[in-house]
Length: 269
Length: 248
Image (cartoon, rainbow over all chains, first blue to last red; front, top):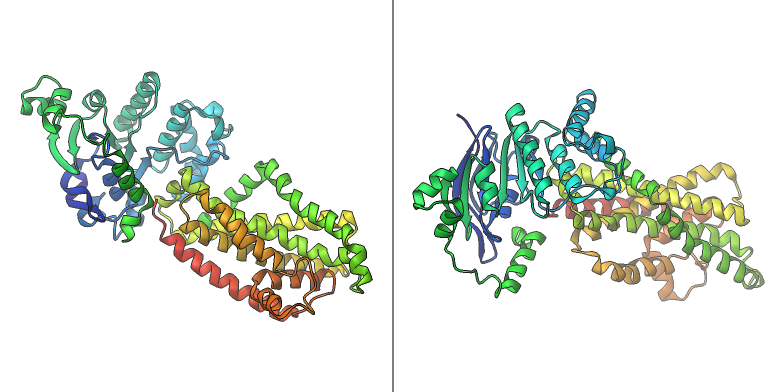
């Protein structure tokens, strides 16, 4: 089977801080793939590089056969993304947010209208299509973002911590939608999470990432077998160590690092 | 083209939906127009300068345009904070088109705001000296709106959050307004003030409005148009460059 994402020797440095340190992995077409790791492990930074928002310091990325640095447009057309924080326009209606996306991604009008209706019905927001997004709950916003991310028939959909802050019901619903779409449309799903049961239950393959490095890759069963543990949780702890991270003590440091990343200062320096 | 259009449309829709913003942003120009227009009218008349209301009208139109335009540009910071900017940044469209669409949308809103103030001034007693020139004045309003929206966008591209907003209001927008000759005639100014006024792009916009609406221009329409077009082009250039450097 073909690989839809191929990453080799990827590195991202912000000043003297290495957020992603020489990682390589591949994601197969039609796969559900999880990046599992604690907070600050480099998951979001990797997604940003895959989605053209950050330039890698070194290493190569191929997404749908294109390199994000040289073929930004082709790469952007190939993926949909649901960010960690909402990225909807609150002052527009659900339908207008979809329409806006469809126009930006150059989906022809007739197809756009059909697809918007199909997706909004699928995520059960069709009856709220003319409501302003600011009236939506967190779960409704997330569903709308998923629908929007799939509007232009992307090959891959990225979800950065998609279930953060959602109640279990919404979480289950959301995964049911995504698994269904993965089956019917063959869209590759790439998500990051720090919930182990979620990675174990949903993903066909998991990469465990910590301190900017990939420590292990495989299915949940392979990872537990490899570490001779009984659950993914034990495997994860065995691989990443069970000491409580000093990140609490060094939280100011982490904040600084995060803010540097979000500001993108590091990318320009 | 479609990208520019949809981003333009978004700005218009957002504007039309925020009724409180439309009304709120009219309060200040209205206050200036009525309090100063009627309050200083007799002094102005006694000084032999004619009807102050006729003089002030174009200045207040300029005021509402610069406030709305800079604010529209600055709105980019909100888009960044509320995440919407990311949605446009990962789309397969050029950043230049995103910037142009946003800026045109903001400029349309600001020029429209100028038009509303014009209508209010009409109700309050302002009379354009030649109605045929009003459409030309509106073209100049669009140009001034474009200039300052581009400036606002350029500033917002380098600002992190709204913390700098007060700074911009107090050290950029207010000086640009007060030094533009919106409130006072340009002849007979002290040398330093006169030089500052000539350095302020808004002066040329208001001068053009005044020439077209009250037949009381100082610089001449040719100079006004030249300066405004050049500065607009420069700000659009700087704005697009800074916008292309944004990382989200």
